[in-house]
Image (tube, helix red, strand yellow):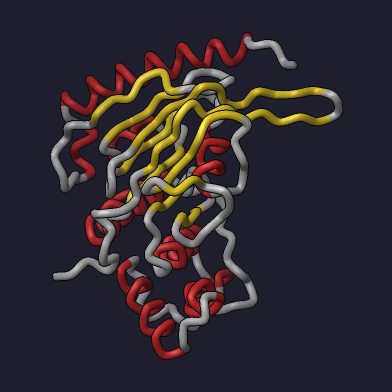
Length: 271
């Protein structure tokens, strides 16, 4: 069976080298990220963990093209990122769907903006809605859906553009525990099909280990990569893997580092 994303396994190499990002306001300057280096392989799933305010979302926004670095370089497949692009799709914690458009119209929107004809874009939108388990909901509106279903629409809307990279900023953070686990399992199933590179920001250690090929732990602000740990648990991963000794051992290691960096974040002076 051919993957919906034809070149997903061959593209999506992220290279972040010596990244620095600072923000200034009211005479103050905050250095969010300093000297951060991170590289992914095409089709890899990498989770970013770290204390609040360490720059996780800032890193994501530089890859998306929403924020420009003050130092260093960010590239995807060797191309320097200078602006947003559908090749780098973002899924936010709070869905950004158009409430006045149907589910189908929301997913079609990016294709329409690119000039794709109505027949093709409808077919593609239906295809990806089926992939995220929402076939039959094409005529519904976002307000008629649960939070988990809204996020599935958001994922389909990103994937229909066949991005080289999917950026996810705590996409399941607002969901209840049961729905969150179901969404994690669904995401892994979709990722197995499309094999696009995923950079996933989360505060949840279990979530990071369950989903990712590698877990990157960031330091307290200004953020950099403290450790980059491979997750050697076999795929596909059933939910029961979280009870295994291998999972728990890696969780203990990650938790210790995150706890230490969180302590540093609490005592760090404000500029």
